[in-house]
Amino acid sequence: MSSKSEVCCEVAIEPYGGKIYTAVKLTQPDTIIILRHRIYERVANQWAEAASEEFEAVVNKGSAKMETIDKRQMEIRTTTGRVIREMSNGMYYFSNDNRVLIMGVRLNEPTESDIHKLGWLRKNDNAWLIRNGIIKITDSQHITIENCKEQRYLTRYNAEYFITYDDRIIDLDLGYPVDQQNWIERAEILNDDRAVRITHAEGTVIHVSGGKGTLIGYMHRSEDKSSTDWSFSIEIGTATRTKFIATIGGIPAGIISDRYVCLQPAGDANAEQCKWLKYEASPLRERHMAHRWQAGIGNCPGCNERGIENFLLKLDPRQWLDGLNSTTEAVTCALEIALIIVTILATVLICTKCIIPLARCTISLSKPPKK
Image (cartoon, rainbow, N blue to C red; front, side, top):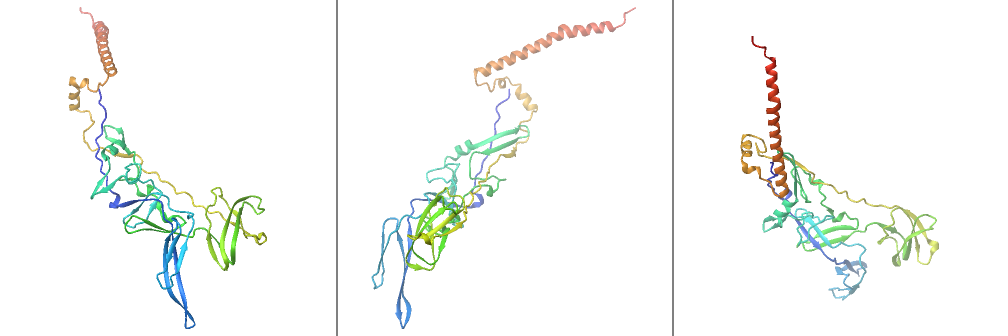
């Protein structure tokens, strides 16, 4: 009887290219506004800058109060609502070489060690560690034998975020830089790696010149204005401004095509101005599939081949019952042995009672009679 096929493997795992990455977990962000304050004085019929200061105020925890440090004792109070867009809570990572913050990938939490998420191979006291690695890697490895004699096999791992000797790093979906989002101007990782500073960009904007007060805006599907999808307002101020830029947030997700946008001063519908605005959207990132079946050939010359040693081994009666693990297998083996014995006896009986006598009779008839 044939025994169960077994494969002995040696698996070695090491960081790709010797690179090291650091993961960070971001929680609720703080909204900080930067105020630049300058004071000018008239000196000799010319204006000269007398003082210049810059303030940073955290405004999502209530109003912020700032006092100048010069003799003028100026006080500034600021308050604002929540920002339109902000970094989501979760896990991010960056390379220790370029320190570019990366998002858009499943990443292990500090207490996790899931081989289906990035970050299951970690450095601990100058040594690389996989928590319960022997069990996880062994359970995740799947091998299919194509040719036992030639030792050809296929292997694959039920894991993510790794490459083998013939994989390509570009086939892995390792996320994308945070600052690729159009509302982020710059993402900076602070020196202690415990905080990330995000600078907002202007994003998609509407340029308006020569206005003041409040502007009311409408988004229509057509120029007849029969259907309005959304409305918004822009606060310019009491003084006429020759040019300013405003960012509009909260546009409904159902708007997925060009819209006819109209702006009018509050209370003066006759001064309305309209224009078609083009809808622009960035496609979702393409996810690459990696880790296909890997083909290989074992390194064991002479293994799995039928030779004189294998023949002598099979003659050992102790090997005949090897592999019988249940009553059903034992009964099946007994029936196979009985069938073999019956076949041998039937063959011997046919030969001795039919074939051999018939051959003797034929030989006797073919001989000439003696005179």
